[in-house]
Length: 503
Image 1 (cartoon, rainbow, N blue to C red):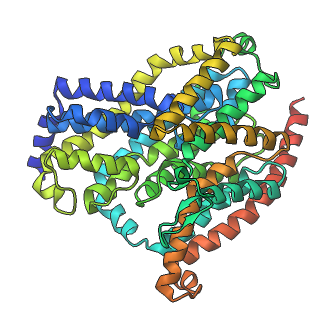
Image 2 (cartoon, rainbow, N blue to C red):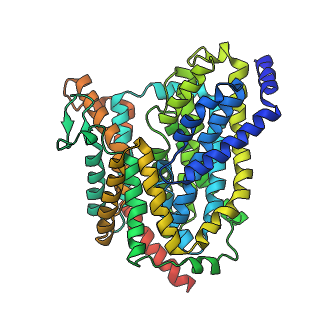
Image 3 (spheres, rainbow, N blue to C red):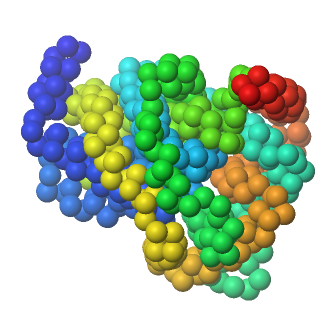
């Protein structure tokens, strides 16, 4: 083992590797920050260029793109209320209000710090605990995945605002949208209305761009956007995180990072689910004076540490079992194969020096991301100083381009515009948009695994009560929903009293 680590360090510490890691991080941050683009697209585009590279620098660059894009998604979520990636959807709940309150740099600083903490914990889990975590993940069958999805959907209770009913309606709409297309079990078309372009389903990213970006652009065009760019600049004098902020959010970041690492290690989940679960947990543990949904810094720390905590962890089932944890790790599976590495239980014994070089490089990449992000934050914050009319026009063009780039189809552009209009009307009626995203993320997981579970049990629902992990998730779901609603009422009362005391 010692000889393997020494050989791995020799493979890792070269100037070439550090150059390509930084290139990958920069590309990933840019692709993550632009709505409609994502890390998987960047990896796919650059994959052919790695064929002539060495195995270690090639894999490190592709992994760095993955890490950078996850942080990059928070940039547009915080600055323009549009998540650059699915995993950043929870970040905007408190990130954008912080930007509206004149603290864009503080919110971005917190996102970068949380991303680094989550990424480091995830990379260390990958390095030291991959075999152990994969043993837990492999015990998950269809019933466990269904129970986990239901547990994730319980987050709707925490993001529904004042009306749980309206939150459930929004979540139901998201689940309904996820059923459009060809049914994977029966092969029948559902809700396509004879339009062959809907056979592949409605792309979640197109809906995401419509719900968050286009709806807001319509509001700006109608002059309902109350925050002016000049106001952001006026109050940005002390716009940075302090040691007190880090101390306050550290427990949240650590807890959320481990939530993300565990969720990421389960194949078929990923950063989006992890970030909402972590946000839900942070809100459940809120203290008097915490203002979740109104610019609470813990509301940025929790989802960002969780979705980055899931990044390296998604490689655990890939490297140890040969099972891709998500779409990005499936793409990376192709990269490993093309560079002559056979993923699976024997990978560490047959290609130890190369694999450990990549794993240790993933830890170093998180530190380099923090350094690179610190230098780029000043540039990103300048987005808030762009005139609103120009920014609105540019964002519409970027979103349309991003929607078209999803599958090179104008249909996705129409879907984005349609749901932008729908979301604008829903917001006017106080329907929260976040549950729509939750429904689309978790709906397919819940549906497919419910059907597979019932097939396994011969149609008996008792299968969910006879499996310990399922039963644990069901009990947690019920308990958390009850506690969350009581906690919301208690927190509102405590916050009001706190504000009176402050006055």
